[in-house]
Image (cartoon, rainbow, N blue to C red; front, top):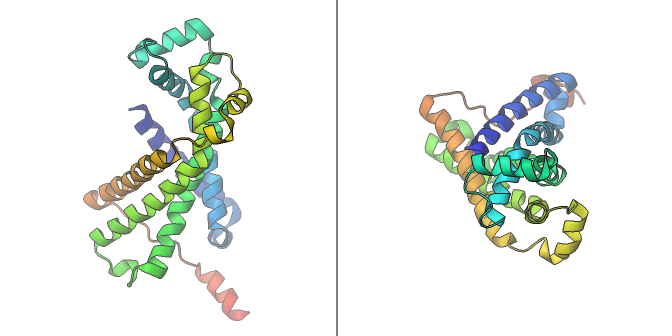
Length: 234
């Protein structure tokens, strides 16, 4: 449940930051530097969302990695507080940023640009001529590709976060040293399969909900008319 809430919060924040940054740099620059815009807005959103996620993430990892510690969040969180104080909830915040910010940047930026490329180079007709089912297939494919890159960039930090919550008193640097370079990449293939499928499913469900409720689904970004005129004049 908390991961669903985190995803919803992150998506809403990302859209707000994207609008904010687009307005700040103007329509033409927002198109020209759209990849940077996707990266900046998603990083800003994740930075804020992780502050709220950290206590819940700490409790989740503690339950998963410490047998007998607790069975539920309601049981785990008071235990963490009594043993470690407030620092117990935020000791993994920096590694969490290291994991989640690259993950989210890749999730949004890679997805958006992959959708553009698929319609431009793979799909044999314009998006406006594709059926809703065909568009959802593109969404799923782009989501899976984005998920693969998400898993790769976030895997070392995810391993460090798990190690921090397994052993008290460790810093992120100490945890990384104990794991070693090879240890931080253990389980990558399984994570790629899991995160790729999860990310694809998230984007598919998000888009399918829009289709089912007939909500507007914006097409891939197009060059503004003012920029087209400038390029033609040159």
